[in-house]
Length: 335
Image 1 (tube, rainbow, N blue to C red):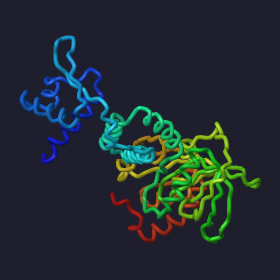
Image 2: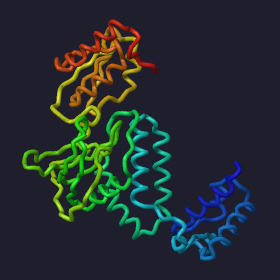
Image 3: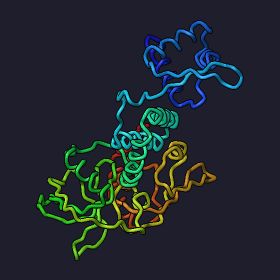
Image 4: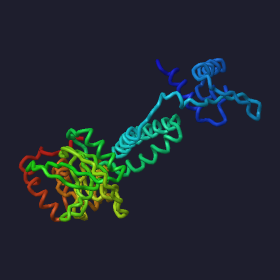
């Protein structure tokens, strides 16, 4: 490959920098499948680029080399937001079943960690842990609205600081603008992106979802709040199909034999359980809220899925079922 030599040198520099014992010419030969002479040229290139390269004689009298002070070059500065974005991308790929790509992203993160100063890495990990707990992926794909990046960054900072904010929020439908004092806990990303926050309004005093695209302004109040130990963003997200929260229902769905194999490849919900029936159909059981959003998803399966329970989901699906019976080609799964 055109840039393979440069990539090998960069990888080798990272290896030499993270190896306490250093690496030998034999190590280079084995790792990159090169001759001893080529290994010597690669070592010489590293020595020219990094004069602080240290030569070590090991106990078996083998010469080894390692790098010192490469972090002081200032060539790499990775922020907590960038690490967070990498983790979100990796989690998204895992949920889509792209395990190999997810592992590669994990490998990229591991490589980045080798070239970041340890003090900076500790600070990043402290903030990253808090930020990852505050950012989740809703299980739904589709088009997403634009979000003001300044508003998102202000909210992220307040989440990390556990600081109350005043949001200027435009209600969907009525477009009525209100000001709401909330304790921001985190985010859910899906077809719409939401702030998960605890409303301090005496009439609410509960967790609410606020569409990020409907937040027109954020004012940090400088007033700290304590995270409630009984709340988990991951648990909050997993209760629902998509992002909508509400009463939990025991849901049973039956997929016809013709789509059973396809349905089994989907991850509908973390609580899902499949049962293969004797007639070739597939029974899916799960416990979730967000029935209306689930109904819209089931619409894509057309007449190939039947709702067994709950009855309220049947009533939501009934108008859709009638429409499909009149137009059999509507809503059929394309892939």
